[in-house]
Image (cartoon, rainbow, N blue to C red; front, side, top):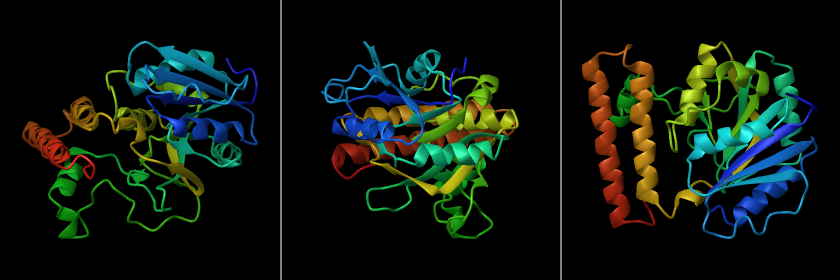
Length: 289
């Protein structure tokens, strides 16, 4: 139940280090009222020890790593914000970020979720900041680089396109920073806990669209994301969860829309991609993604 016009910020942490402190400090400096709900997935570092001492911060300490979706859902009963921000612990926002999100969402009541321009440390737009849903066909286009052969072939990455000059509707935004309308969440439901890490955001996007809620990309709201900080200690395991999540995503949403042969080709391609990236990570652990 909403008791005040406040934004509930949920941060799932796993060995976020000093970046978690920077993330939380940036949220607490917001010009809009906030509560911060940190769900720690059994971190082994000291990231919780250096957090700001503030009554607006609540911490849930898990005894095991529950994954992203399950940990996020765990915090929801403790929140009461009209809007929620699902934020990665390696993100930093500006003081007016949340107020600007609220303004755009208030002006677009059909929108269930919004994201901003998620940037790398060098100021470049991060891959995945703007995207289409990675259908099996778009995935094949990306894997086979068909988009390099002819412009009519489109993959799901939109980063190369010019930035719009105003908020626009997209199929997907960055899962690192998702600004969610609570009333829409209550209709759509929480994130699917069958995903451990990665692809739960894609699943959510599909379900928001299915309930006729739009997803907005707001280009003039900038968010810094130091990508991969929480996953560097277990890169191959993270790769495994990511690719396993993609397979679950395809089977859940597209098994009745695509020929079985094409779907299985895509699934096998995902498996081969995982094997290649895992081998690359073993050989060059500091340079592989």
